[in-house]
Length: 272
Ligand code: G3D
Ligand code: MG
Image 1 (cartoon, rainbow, N blue to C red):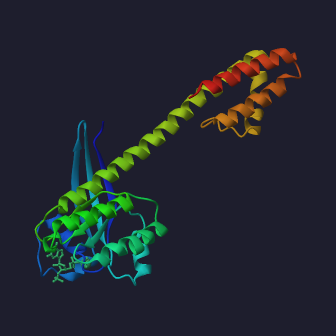
Image 2 (cartoon, rainbow, N blue to C red; image 1 turned 120 degrees about the horizontal axis):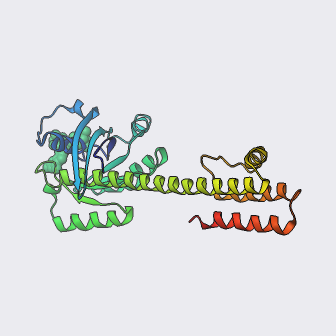
Image 3 (cartoon, rainbow, N blue to C red; image 1 turned 90 degrees about the vertical axis):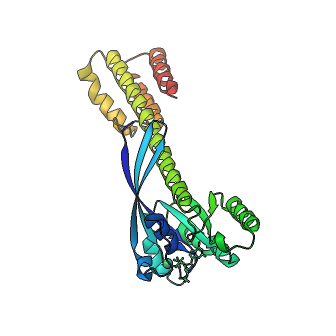
């Protein structure tokens, strides 16, 4: 398989001060600083990643959008959601309300603007939590409710920062693979229908005793049936077989017409 390079926009969403900007800084420059420049928070940060799995290397560039945390900025947020292919949903483990607002605000808001996309939930500031176990339980509940992977992280210590971003990267790549193979399946099926369409046309030409006499009729009946010869569908071909049988019935006996029709429908049926 050819190595491919993919560029993807991702979002960091969550209430103010949950640690979005700190997580990005930690992930991108592997440093936690208490005095970083806050304007960085409105910027787009770029990070190159390499995902390796058996037999496949995927180079991925993340364009990381640090979306403004305040809930009031709906308009700005919605425009920054456009084109995103994944999101990290961040809350602060020391403030329960920031976890609730992922469910009540950030996720519905995101879904109202964009297509479904891979999501990873991150409970940040675990270095400050009284009980790691309680934090884990709360995260597990949230993961169950949302049906997405999740991690406890600390931008301060660096715990699970890379893990969270990489989980999102993997999920984006497998989402892409799934979409590609779905498209490939559709293309393969289309190819089989092209073969069958050819077979039907040749058969009709045989019956008509020649290509020249048959083709104008074929063209017309295919058009009537709405068949695009480069991408025929099962339904379209079935209809075309009906129309061709109708056209034949003016010069062949009914039993022969019926036999040809049955044979052609059989070819269509044989396509999985
Ligand atoms: P935001 O971008 O989501 O608004 P910030 O959040 O990254 O600006 O972080 C908000 C505050 O939380 C910052 O503190 C930051 O240093 C702190 N913070 C972020 N992540 C962690 C973490 O994992 N652990 C701890 N202990 N603190 C964290 P200040 O004081 O600069 O406002
Ligand atoms: Mg910020």
